[in-house]
Length: 362
Image 1 (cartoon, one colour):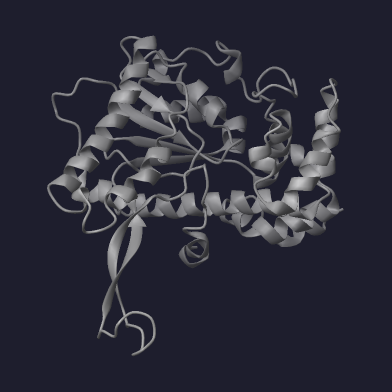
Image 2: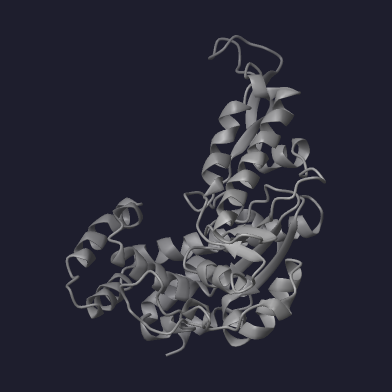
């Protein structure tokens, strides 16, 4: 799997957590005499590496005397169930996980401070000071949210983003969902929010998204009509399917690297469909993983948003009913083939399909 996933590593760019990077020197041959810069035997080019490496190598654990709630993270591709997973965690009196901090936005900016030798934080001791202050910013921000639930031991963030370990003491809950359901949910969600940022992200989808928006009426059912129409367009399906595959394959690679000890922190992954089928069993495992006593958690349903699929299917709500296999009602045979070509490897990496024959089924 490493070779397969490696192809996509570094291509999962965008607001969901694209890799922030810092510079490392790379040696390269100079230009020939008379071409470009003056001839030298070698010149130094400043390439870039993930800023997570800087945090790993120059960051620190919190002090033993730090009594603030310890941070954890719920991550995954958008529309994969990060909200639901955090709601389940919130049933425990000692945990609080509400809101999206989007720390990856700050992480992506950090390399601009450490990328070249003339910058203050390129060298020690400033580099360590920068890494540790970044981590302290994260800890203090999350700890501040815990005032809404006094006495909690764990405080979390559920930004839908790539798995990017930033705090060495933290646990990470990663949720995966069948990419076909993700594409369907993302399509309805993008229409519901009338998000031109998403619909216009690439030129190939700009016109068809605007035409789909024109189909919307005050009737919620028009969202599904417009969504099904978008799914008959190859550019739309391939774009969202490809984004999903790049995200999940990158996360799978990061999980392997964390388990191999290349990055600090702990990680537990769950498939949305398994959590849907075995909610009670898996939520108990999540509590234990976070160091919490499962017996103290409130019953599922105490908050309606903790019920698998929620309790209603109001299409226009951000919290849509998360039906497993909903894509089967909306994908055309062509959409199935487009998805397989764009993201079939992701389906197989996560165990959703054994081969590509599903796309040929009637």
